[in-house]
Image (cartoon, rainbow, N blue to C red; front, side, top):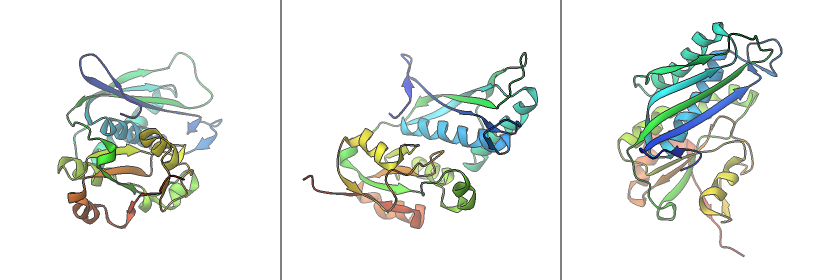
Length: 228
């Protein structure tokens, strides 16, 4: 599990947030609210998948005012449209008593664990997608890891593990999984992946060719170096 919490009843809880990003005049980054909620929901869904779970309900915490709610809702729906699934029911609340100067959003998903994790050392690992953030993300959208492809691979039992990459880069996530194990990959290992534009994929050896056929040229191997 990456950043998920497993409750005593077996539910998996994941969350992501965004601050000062959106359509308000004093936001640090100006982008449509739909884009903010899309990428926040994307990260939260990938965290569910990393825990072997599928979400069945969503809570949205909106600090940007009543008008932003519908735009945020649209962005979340886009995530599930992308994987060709119905969106789980969405509820939440809006800060409408006090007008904020900057945008704020948090998305939490509750899901059910349906896949059992395999030991990481028994799998072959790949990067899928390119680390991108900010303007580079907008310029190279075609290099962002596809949620639809990942979803299909999970449903078809083609991949055994999904691990989203965040602001600490590929190196940060490899360390969380394997500790200080030296490795090489196609990308700058410490580059931020922003809203998980690159994902680590664990595959059983016998299914590598199937995974490569599905994911294409963006699926690149991680190589392990001998420790000094």
